[in-house]
Figure 1: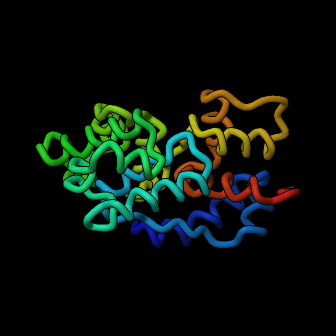
Figure 2 (figure 1 turned 135 degrees about the horizontal axis):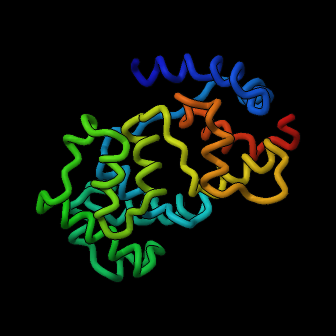
Length: 207
């Protein structure tokens, strides 16, 4: 099944299997995930956006990209960028180190993106989390928004956990085990359900 076919099939399945999610799907409409095709750029962007609010991260990203020769997050440009240019863009010293490390490992061909499509979700997570600055959350985002894997549940994502707390009327944020249990009806489209969870946070009364 292509990712486009997944986007078409998932909402009907989720409406039927999860009554809690049904009102969100009806209000939000079709799932609009757009995959990022450049795998290095996508992972670098994920690292850059870690633990930052969307508007702040976007502003830093845009300032950084403006300083790169290719006007995009590319390995050679990031590896060559000076400390001052990173600082002026607003990139922290820690993330500067992560981005440079990823860039150099990619240039040295120690990190290879070409064969990831043939690997399982678990294998991709194991491969990517060897890179400094890439944790399970980052690997989950890569699986969802770059490789287009349909059944990823990012149990470490605060937005998804907050949405699940709201949707399932819980007293506190669910832990990963409870997230997995509550999300069983979403399978095999947990990625799409997670996208609707994020959208649900913009709805005052998802019920």
